[in-house]
Image (cartoon, rainbow over all chains, first blue to last red; front, side, top):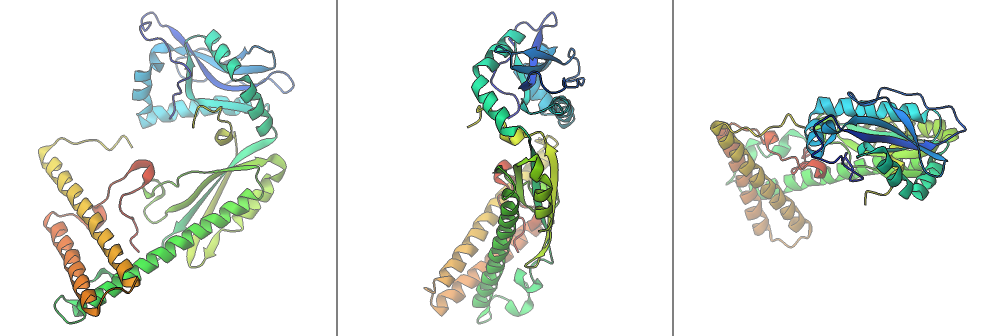
Length: 282
Length: 94
């Protein structure tokens, strides 16, 4: 989900330090300040600007050692959490710096071409789409909204079916067990519905201030902590002038709802990664 | 997630296999319980059937406890993470 199929360095040229072109983002030429330049990926050349055909767009690019970016090398490097973090941070830093001067279309991590000519040809093919996306995100930013719910005391102690009065064989014990299971199941469903309602309310409150929204699969408890299930993981594309309204509206929904302890996290402004896909993904 | 590695130590492999099998049994057991609740809600069980179904489920639950004890596993340890689909078993069987 990181490397794209836009282009890959030719294998077989691994000897002799062949270089590939890594593209970070596309932005308009002129107008705003020239984007600040950050170091980019380790081992590569200087990050620079590549003018694209037409004259009104430019790409932020870096020459990187092709051997570090073959499919196999990428699979190995991006499978290593530390190395992945390093790559992602370098990528994000370049894009954030470029975005300081105005709207950008960030490209996926490790978008590679065998040569700068192929990069500009491929991006020229997507010119219309890139211009649409730039228009869409101009003056807007991405805000992330996450909702966690803290767990309260678990099911009542009798619900595990171990109270001595319910020993198998006693008359009514089976029916009593079944009734307990039903109670537990109803609690579970009621809770699940309450969680969905809370998530829905926060999402609606944020969406009222946004021009677009995406919901992602909430992180599992392996990431959030056992007792802190995430119930909403969403991103919103927001006009810069409405960002403070969105933050206030969403924060106001934190606290207690129907016995749930709701934690709302808002972060931003981010480069609108979630709203700038050039259509490679379905 | 790359800290999760396949451990080919024979002792651990057997244990992982047991834990996998118990996880699947636990999944089926939970599904049976939910199905039983559905039957109960539909009110198409006679009291005698309710009693028998409840007793069977209670025994199944106790058998799970015994199996887990025997293999020194806790119920909470039984789960499979299905990546973007989340865990196989609800992590909070409230």
